[in-house]
Structures are given as C-alpha cells and as structure tokens.
Image (cartoon, rainbow, N blue to C red):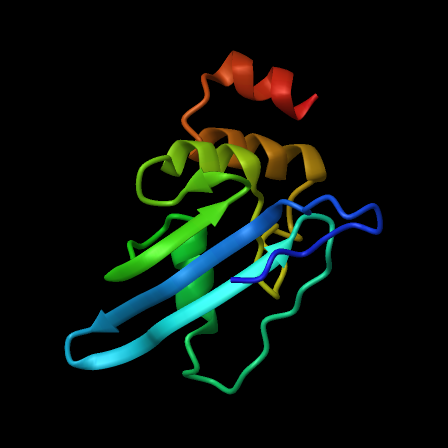
Length: 128
C-alpha cells in the first residue's frame, strides 16, 4: 500500500490502516477485502448506500465485532491483538445524539460513568 508523505518527505503514520478486511454474517458477505490507509491528521468520510458495510467496518475498527479476515490497525494498535489499545485511543459516536435530552449534562456524564462500571465516587470525579 503506498505511503503518504509530508512535504518534508517523511512518511505520515496511518490513523487507520486495513488490508483485506472481511466480514460475513452467515452466507451474506458484508465486507469483501477492504483496503484503507487513512493518514493521521486527515479528514475521511465513509459513504455508501444502505447495506454497503459502513457500520460493520466501523464496528470492526472500534473492536465491537471481530473481522473474519484481513488485518487492521487503528492508531498503531492491531485490532485483533491490542483491542484495549484501540479503545483507549478512539472515540466513536453515531449520527444521532447519544445523550438523553431529558436529563442534565452532568446526569448524562454520570450515566456514561455508570455504563463504564466506574464507582460512584470515580464517576462523580470524572463528570466534574
């Protein structure tokens, strides 16, 4: 895969890199050998029709589901051998708000702390 280079000729590390990424659900192939190289610091959009595999690719790259084949690295961490490293380096949100508009911002933060299994005290500290 070609290496992106800065103006000074030095290589730009990849924020995301995949080679031959594959995923099937039963006999339905949703990703069939995806190759990506997204340089660190770039802006990238993943576009396509419904059913094209966009959500599956994001779920694989964020370590929520495993790939059936291929390789991928996110922020220098292999998704298969270092999922904790990937998760520590990223943040993922969907296209719709993931917060509850009926509670305060602090209450939303406390809810997220609870979902991440933080103690009540640690949750309050992080929310503050």
